[in-house]
Image (cartoon, rainbow, N blue to C red):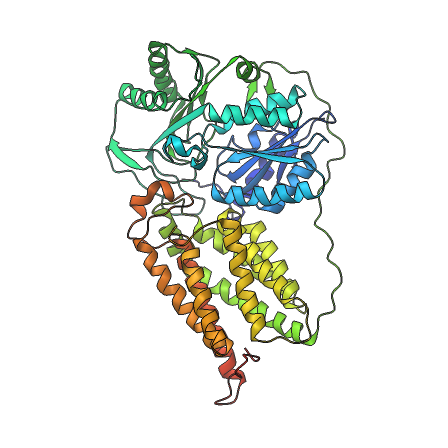
Length: 586
């Protein structure tokens, strides 16, 4: 259990501050993560890695010569926000372009993808290579759906060495893709991990059992097995990885035994010895292996085995020197301190003069955000428990962080138009929450605000446009379809019911009530679905019988907003005159 903290909500930021204080010769703090504190040659490709906190040495511990140039660091087990990735990449850029690399998780894909679009739009050529080494998360013919675990290290190391050698962005990207294809991993857990401030682990493994195929965000494995002996465990891991080897595999491999947090080094070494014997018996030569904690999961009791099949080119870059706080190989010449590391500030907002109607809607937006915060706080614990069944358990705390930041940003912008307030709230939600829900909710709230603009009058048609903009932002960004067991399964019924009522001449408050009822009903029905997206997908059997947490939270939020709007209109309007047919008062 993680015990050393003041406020659990500040754990990730304070741990990162302390890491920088202990490693100033390697890294400097920037808003969103860290970059090298030593000189980077002009024109060198910047490798920017990242993900949620709680995985040290990944990701900040791998920043230094021969490896990463910067790391974007999210909250505990949550992806960094797009703005964080953007600012870290801007600070890391040395004029040779940027390669973003990270584990293939939905939230990371969304946030890093948004940052990539922004960087390219500003003329900083940026590419992405996601790590997909976990063989338990998808079959071999769906390699692109696999998630990234300890194979992060092989991809980052070879891409970083290629950048250090002076290869251009095309060359670094090609080697990262090649390394990822030739890397395979499989993990096991003996017990779950505990988020800071939580009373219980995200999952338990029954006594005498082992969970096979775990993720690194506290996700349980996909199956449970009787606890093996060390020899049996070594045979299980080696056999499954060799059966999944790439088409062009040779006979030289890097073997990495990775501890996830609490397995002792003596145990890891014992297991590695047995693994090496099995690999040698299979006709493989083990090249420059690693054994230790490299990509962890807080205090999880577990480990993983990674194999990288080398060719002559990859072996050269795997063996190249690197010097970072947590990973050192060979010898590198000392580097001079880097001068002029500056924060990348957000753009200064232009001065706005809201119309009276836009200001009134802004006041309502601030009040609605406060209601959303209240309902999320009320249900935070149950949302987290629901997410832990087949996910990483962070949905409740992620939603809480996001909506706390959004409500505060809305209050700070009070007096502005609804568009300005919702844009500020959405940006804050994305920045603070991270993760998939942070990206989706942040983008959707911004889209809703932008659809309102700063107009002289508003009608029910504008309410319909807000809903359409909100829904489009989520569906276009998240790419989920009905039946995938995501928030979309509640979102689309909400939209359809809302617009049907509105198009039929109902006032906005009645349309909102119909939409909220449809959303809550649809959210409950997701219990019968198998997840086809996100971290719950590999754990479909565990998810059956339980509703999707994203759909549930959306239903709760729309219901609370509906109740609030209804109460506001009941208080403001004379009896029998709650709103006109156009929904103008609503």
